Amino acid sequence: MTAAENRDEDNNGGRLAQRNDLPELLKKLRAQTPARLLAGRSGAAYRTSTQLDLREAQATARDAVRAELNLVADLGEDFLRKWNLFEVFSRAASKDEYLLRPDLGRQLSEASREDLINRCVPEQDLQIAIGDGLSVTAVGKQIPRLLPLLCAGAQARGWSIGSIPAIHHCRVGILNELGELLKPTVVVLLIGERPGLATAESLSAYMAYRPKTSDTDANRNLISNIHARGVGPEHAAQRILNLATLMMKTRESGFQLREELENQTAHPRLP
Image 1 (cartoon, rainbow, N blue to C red):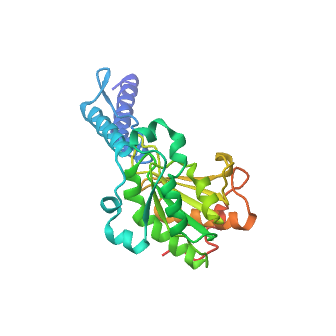
Image 2 (image 1 turned 120 degrees about the vertical axis):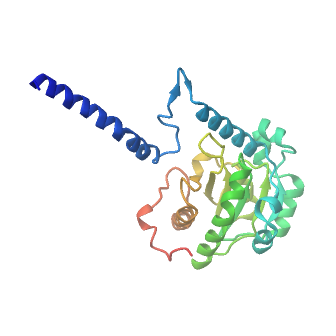
């Protein structure tokens, strides 16, 4: 065999080895993200399996946005009874109005304002609220695990906790009204995120120190992507509690406040 033939054989073998390694490399790469990387193609189009997967993800996202929150069906009677959850409503009277008029989702209806005042003890250390937001699916998936962890952690710190409302047709700005009506030290709004093609189960925690009517997004802090493939419930609860502790210590919230992630073990670990 000539030297040139040897070189050709080595080069072919190298290319073959690279091709044999490629599937394993793809597996490792794709395991790092839910994004549809290197999904393959058939001619100029996606493969049929990829097309069907995208259509399913789109349908799931649309269902998450359009669904109406049903506390019994989504969370269960036992859970509602244990945590004494109660329903209130924003000024958006329907899902369509909620989607078309974001401003109405930032205010409670008159009846709900009165109900909130009658049911909740004001001036608590921590006021938690649940909002359907843009994903009822996220509420049903994440709240049953996250809420008990938050309450247990707050109790371990000796904080008082307000009664917990579940708000229909809710937007983030409703934090301000909760602050004005109940005067808590810190408000945490657990609300369904806008779903995407990667997941429709993602929850966000918006937080503010003594929120008031004039506050904007600049006065709030956010922990997002709370779901199985993002920030897990245990980690999310720890971050929320640590951030609430920092708010109480500094008496502020918003863009000027930074999470002290290195201090996450300063308090007892969550159960």
